[in-house]
Image 1 (cartoon, one colour):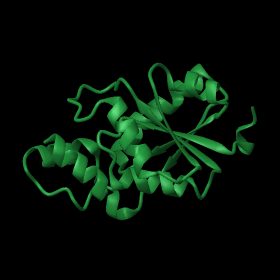
Image 2: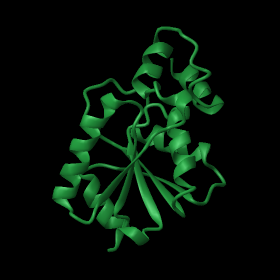
Image 3: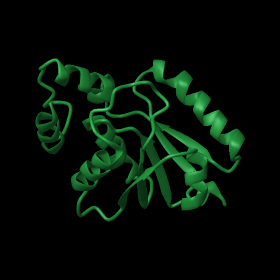
Image 4: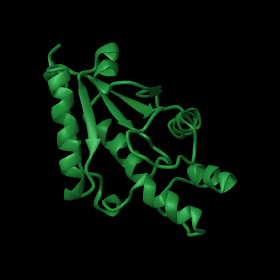
Length: 164
């Protein structure tokens, strides 16, 4: 498959919860690709306490992008390159918030390329106002009673409030 003609992209992540930064990357990806597969990881490679199950995260993101036919939300477990092969989508998009993200993301991109040499990873920086934002940070602030309304959509804020 020729990656230069790919019309779709996979945006993988835990999205626990999905933040305005994630939404920004999805929206900007739609400027570059005809379709964005938002791939919600069932099992994260990071040790962290989940706020929402993968099914809940998938449903929240579907609700956020309801009516946007070019965004398809799926959940997955296993290797991302296997999902890319299954979807016939050889392009993965990853958000880079800061230089500190680059080393980990670069290693993942290289491993994915080693496992499936047709897979390309594109790094996309979110808009500047989201450059510090992470799901982990939002989850921590919310758990401690802080106001995260500037960092997540009203829908996500409502779901978080119900959960916490």
